Image 1 (cartoon, rainbow, N blue to C red):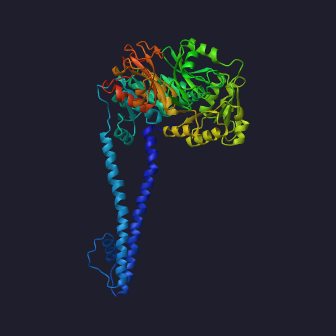
Image 2 (image 1 turned 90 degrees about the vertical axis):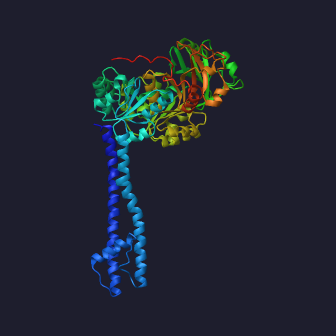
Image 3 (image 1 turned 180 degrees about the vertical axis):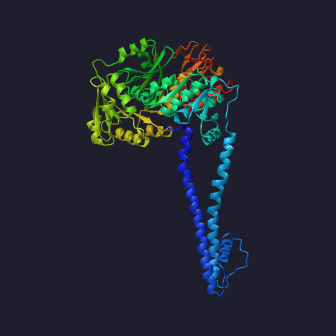
Length: 588
């Protein structure tokens, strides 16, 4: 059974406290040793000078000299004794420079700061706070959710058990409530009855306890949790969770959906109401080599070109832009419109080329299942024997996958897995350093290969792109986007790590401006790709932003979103991104 968050944090800090105590004991022991040695040498030198002193006097002299007090009542008469006195004084100064700061910081300043943080960390929220999201725990997913909520001015409260950690988050500007995670009073103090949703991203066992406790405090608030094991989904549902997010499976499916294939067909990545957002690779279609306007004219009626990407990066949609084999189109339309696109551009009589998956963990296996369901042959490279076969026993006879045992960093293993004939590689290990290595390795072996890589930490996303990845996805972004959409907040579609489609209220200053206004992109980094009516219908083919449009569909990263809000929406200060009334909360 997993420890509660606070107990786990305290258990993690216990070795650190032990090391500090041992360091303090060593410092004291060294000080005592110096006093004893100096006292013995003092007695020996005084004996040579013909003087006799007691052991107490020797210790007294050693301490007063090391502390630089130097009363002068006991002095040496020879140069040797005076040199020894200088040595004792210098060693004492050095020792005190180490001893005093250590003990003052360790046993005075640090406890005082901890007590101050505990005293300042809130135990309850304001009674007027409502429609907020409670985030239980502090990990990459909840931190990404909290940062997004801050940009969108949606209230989010982090429920933390450890007072020190809560104080640190509070100092960084996060709204927190501290208290035991298994106490119903903690959630009542956090205003759970007025909350929009409760999100918990702890271990499966801890999430079960949280869901039970939240249900005790409030019976109808929606509860969303994460699960690492498939068998936990039913248990968490019984505990009271309305939405169980299996991050490994979701990330694997999302990575598989970014494999655009070699037949030109579209891949759905999200939707806004009845409007589907999809990606399509130009590879293998007659769109390659066309200009932007010519390519638009070739699209079926109802299909709108929202954006163009290459190597995971947006390209300015200027009239002189050329469509290349490596171009990815971001399209919108109804299911019928996109089916017409497939019918026009999907290569006849061609089968999907195989995909190589590096890593047979949860993410890799989920990606393989998604590809197999689409009829895409795939090969999994896994170092641990029997890991994939056991997990895939339910798919025997139906899945089009092959397992190659070995090290994915071995060129011979990659060749045996069919790298030379593959259309894409999915890099799924948890280790970002390994993923950077594998991405760079595969890019050098086959420069034209499509590479989609997983990132654990946001700081490594740019590195993976520089290593040659065409797309990068992470736990934090996938989890935060899924939970954000489930909370009934403004809907978002993740195009690639760092690029999202999201809705914002239309600023008054942008009415009747061109929809592809380069000034907006220059000032904020956001691309306006479509306008939305009150009923959510998207319009991407209009030349200008009509005054009747109530929302804009933007494409950009978190920094661009922040600049857009600061530039165009800061005077409005909307509390909800969608600009409308709060979405109704689902009830159990």
